[in-house]
Length: 316
Figure 1 (spheres, rainbow, N blue to C red):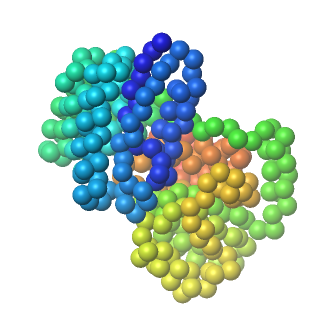
Figure 2 (cartoon, helix red, strand yellow):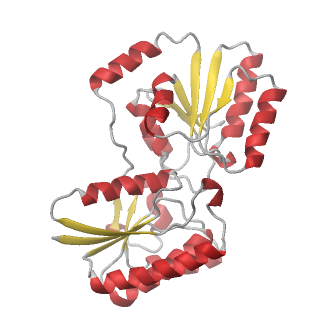
Figure 3 (cartoon, rainbow, N blue to C red):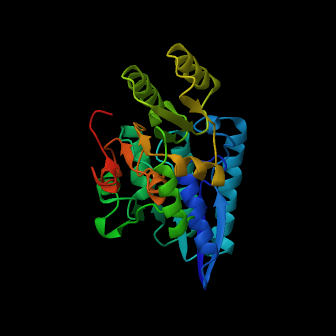
């Protein structure tokens, strides 16, 4: 029986890395001959809490650090699987967690890097001490250079993101058949409503499409980062007379989210998020045979076959 200690952010809140980690954890828990224990590293409850520091998070971090040390000593795992943050307070927190692990765990930690590293003198000190001579998984070939200064290439593995297929071939054929009957172009934005994910750009595009007389509908599905962002969105829609064709629905999951994917003719993902790595929403769109238009950053250009499964234009 192989013993794995699984250290990762998990939902809530719901964002790509946490959702992917939850899926990996479920797979491990249901795999024969593996005993897994997990410790949730994050304390944010809503997307608007992510990246903010408060006393509750600081207290929670000390509790997690103590629990990690306890599990290393008593559970004695063969593998420590760790999904670290790569910036801000969370990087400092996870650096301290890694130091706690190394006190009793003499093997190499397996880091699964799901966000980009950001180089500066302070971060580089933490990266070097945390990653040096350890092992890592990255989401694509283009991301190897992010951590190769500290981890040998022989110790770096590539494992792209994946999503669970939730529709049968028969259902997909039915979805495609119904989509062909759309009276207008259905555009979908599916991500957290963070400005760096590109929703303001798509709003501007909607204004241009309306001015040029295109017949379309655009749905924005995702959790708001702040009340101010939501107000800015609504003000823009009203000012540009888009109320009948542009809609924000908030966060949707499961069947509700899949309803939007089933109706969409195209997914637009104009992300400029500086820690973007893969964009699992692209895979969710493919599952429903929806082409994707997205920015050419990180592994996105490897995920989209230009002019076949979508487009990665430089002007987004």
